[in-house]
Amino acid sequence: MGLIDFGVKWLMRLCYGAGGVAGVAVALLYFFQEKILYVPTIPGMPDFSNITPERYGMASQDVDIVTKDGIKIHAWLLRLKQWTAEELKSRPVILFFQENAGPMAFRLPFLKLMIRHLGCPVFAVSYRGYRLSEGQLSEGKPTEKGLKEDARAALAHLAQNPAVDGSRVVVFGRSLGGAVALHLAAEKPRQVIGVMVENTFTSVEDMVSRVVPPLGLIIGTGKPGNFLVTNKWRNNEAIGQLDNVPLLMLVSGQDEMVPSEQMYSLHKLQRSKQCKLVEFPLSSHMDAYDKEPVQYWNALTEFMDQFK
Image (cartoon, rainbow, N blue to C red; front, side, top):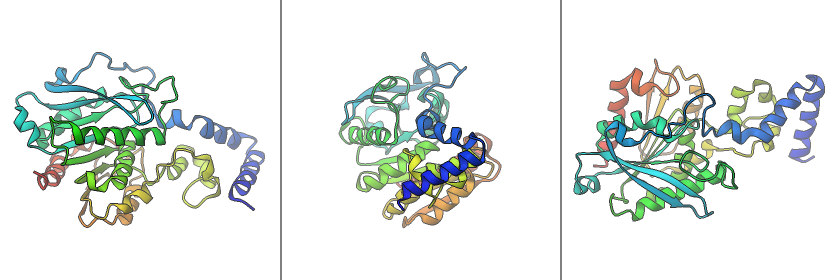
C-alpha cells in the first residue's frame, strides 16, 4: 500500500468518525495553507503604505530585484544616516528575513534598534506577494518555492552591490524568516558567514498540530498525512547542513506561537562547529528584544563582533 493511499484511508476514517469536522479541517489545510502560512496584510490593520525608513531616522536605498522566475521583489538597504559610504562598506551586512504576517514596514522599529546595537547595515527583503513586491494576484504568490527564489535573488544582489561588502553576509530570520534563512544558508554555505535564527520551527508539518490539533493524528514527523502539506519548510533537515557556518539560535521560553521545544529540537540536530543557543525565559514569540533587551542585544552583538 502506498503512503498516499494509506493517508487517504486515514482521512476517510477521520471524516466519518468526527462527523466531517476533520474533513473540513483537512480541506482548509490543503487548499488554503498558503493563505494561512503567508499573511502579507493583517485584516483590520493599516498596511503601513506611507511608512518609510526615514520616518525612523534611518537612511535607505530602495532596491528592486527580479528573481529567476521573473518576479520583482522589493528590498531596503538600511543604515544610519551619519555613516559615510566608506563606513557602510567596511561593515558586515545582515540579510534580514521577516516573520509571516504584515509588511516589512512593521519591522522598521526593530530594524533601527538592530542597526544601532550591532553597527551593521541591514538588507530587508519583502517576500513576493508582500507590500512593494509583485505577486499578490499572479503566479508569484507566496510559496515555499517562491520565497526560496526570493532569498537566492537577495543574496545574489548583495554579492554585486558596490555599496556593501557582499563577501560578509550574515543571514537573520525570525519565525518563518528563520526557515528562509536556514534553507538559504544550507544551499549557499560559502556565500554567508553566519546565521541567526529566532523562534523558528522544525517543519510546517510539525506545526500543523499546533494550529489544528486534531490533524496532529495524521500530520507531523513520520506521519502518513504529510503529503497534504505542500509548504513543508523542513528546517530539521536544513540545519544539519550548516557544519561550517557559525550559528546563533534565540529561543523564547514563553513562545505562544511556536513551541520552544521545536527550537530545542533544532539545536540537537545542528552540526555547526560554532553554535550558541541563547534562552529568554520571560519572553513571548517576538518580544525578547523588548522584554529582555540586555540579554538579547548582548547575544547578537557578541555574535556579530567576530565578523568585524
